[in-house]
Length: 438
Ligand code: XLS
Ligand code: NI
Ligand code: NI
Image (cartoon, rainbow, N blue to C red):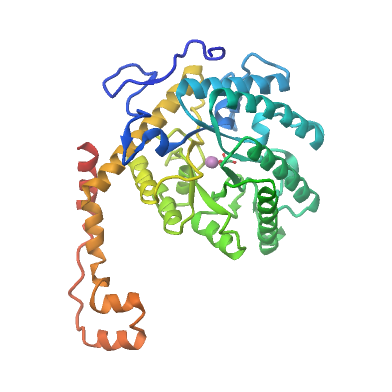
């Protein structure tokens, strides 16, 4: 199967000493780490939109990469993209992919025509999935590109737009179910606002929840057993996005009774846009039982927008995989590269090189995370840091035996507190380096 990327061979694991750029140096899919193969740990996914669609245009200039795959007519182009996608998955040994409805098939003049286009392409995708054994990680609907969504979709002030969004979600869920997807993502494209002078925030949030409940009800009715995900993002395209970060999305899910069906899809670049670290968002989700899936990418800390770069920091990848391991691994979710090669990296080969770099980074991250756990010194330090809650007054606080009155009586007898210990951050950071370097 070599039609679109003729010069690129299948990418194999060659080990860290290989100087072949088109090989994995650290990702050995069959290697067992912490009881599972690397392949099983990650469930790596390809983002259809960045990989098959994005041509590198930005606010100031046109595309630089050719993603026409030799086709002009849009439906023909869409079919070529399907085949190019499966050639990429095959050559890169990536098992999963993710898409928005409009990534896979062009929008028609009417909703009915758009749906017909989708049916044709989904047939094609289904055939390729059967042949190749590749799987759909999650599907979603693009409710932000078309100008009808200028003021939002589920949070639009216009009921017709809400209805249109609902119809698009219905179809996207049907496709996801038909292709065996284990997740359905709500990234709040334009669900937010620019100014409160024209916005009823509470009403918009109620409507968003109404739409999500409709989605759950319909999906369960047609047999969807996977998880829904909210993908938090604080800003861009709207000045203020409603799903600001993991904690905000968590509050929303709890308020509207959606906790049973929803988890989070945490994206690295969105975490940093929210002023958090990637690990913070993952840890928050894990602590609250809502860590669903990951959009693995990175921003550029010198730029203030969602640059969706391929991740290369082994520190971030290690701390991400530490959270994933602590959560017991992915269930419905996986690790989707919501990332694209830079505008200046426009060769076909750059697609492969960028995935290799992201995949190898996470392979290293997993190995390091496993070493951190096996080493045990960091966990032991943390365990001891909280040891005062195991006995005496600490245990009474945890068990509920002590209330304010009992604690006052205890505190009155304390005098100056002399039991505080150093947090030893610098020691822990150098210990982490030591574990990384080995
Ligand atoms: C955009 C989002 C988007 C979602 C899917 O910032 O990351 O790509 O992952 O709609
Ligand atoms: Ni993003
Ligand atoms: Ni994303």
